[in-house]
Amino acid sequence: MPTKNPYKIIKALLFLLLLTTISNFSFAHDGRPIYIELKEVTESSYILRWKVPPIMQPGTEPEIHLKGEFCQIQPEITGPAGPNVKSYLCRNPHPNNFTRLYNPLTIKITYPIANPALSSLIHFEKSDGDTINLFNSPKVLEINLPSRLTIWDCVKQYIEAGFLHILEGYDHLLFVLCLVFIARNFRSTLIAISGFTLGHSLTLGLASLDLFTIRVDVVEVLIPLSIMLLAAEIVYAHNGQSKTSLTRRYPAIVASGFGLLHGFGFASALAELGLPHSNKITALFSFNIGVELGQILFVLVLIFLSSTVQWIFSNWKISILYQHILTQSKYAIYPVGVVSGYWAIERTVGLIS
Image (cartoon, rainbow, N blue to C red; front, side, top):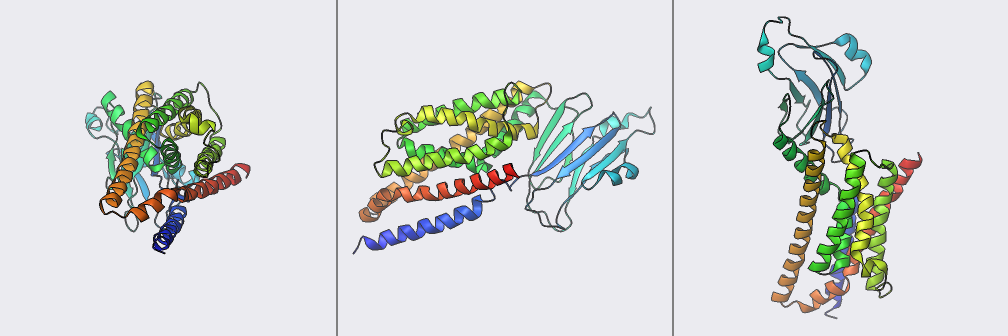
């Protein structure tokens, strides 16, 4: 009798975890920032476009403006271009006045109601083919556009982009979570994560430099399938059915193989940001570092939480409850399989349609 109550509590908590996971992760890709693209057609004309995340309700979308001392909107071009598109002419009416050089262009974001705490990504494509990408927190609503980024600005920008991408990419994090479940100890986890890093770093570089590519929509379907496979392996191993499988015996090899797949997913995110014409390799390397830092942070948090729970139960001497958590830990992976299955179906429907 004493063992039944903790067991019921665990099942109830896991059921709530399942509901929470589905409600949160079903919209895994809706936390995207406001994407703003400014294209310099000539030295004095610009096209401004922007996209807002689908989670924004009608009437709450922001208005984006290009500000500059000599910038004027061109209504005869802006109107026919459609919504979220504007054309600007930024020509100095006094050619001998060089004030324009000391008054940089500024992107201004205004909300009709309230700031919904969305970050913004600005992609500035210059007429010479160079690109500048600026990532801004939700509080930054006016952004000065520099004439160019230094190499250290580039490194900082792309490390931050990679770091944020992995922490917001719940499908990649769930795959890492499954690797930790399979590895079971720190040494095996380190080897498996290293294999995953090696795999996705290779395809990230190949795809980003256009040396080898694959359709993004196909990759988006295959990624949740890889999570489902690992989740099934975890459950089967707990039941004593697959302890000799390739995944259990050589997790690093399997992680490397699936890492190749996930690398194409990272490359699609990097493609949306763009690579600066003059610092492609630096930006690519920095983005990958950011991804690794986010991945390491996630693994360290998992290890810390696991150690903390173990310490609490052992010091409070709740041995029965702790034993049940260990023996029923396979149920914690069920929500992962359910959510990845939902993603696979959702993305397959999108692929077919």
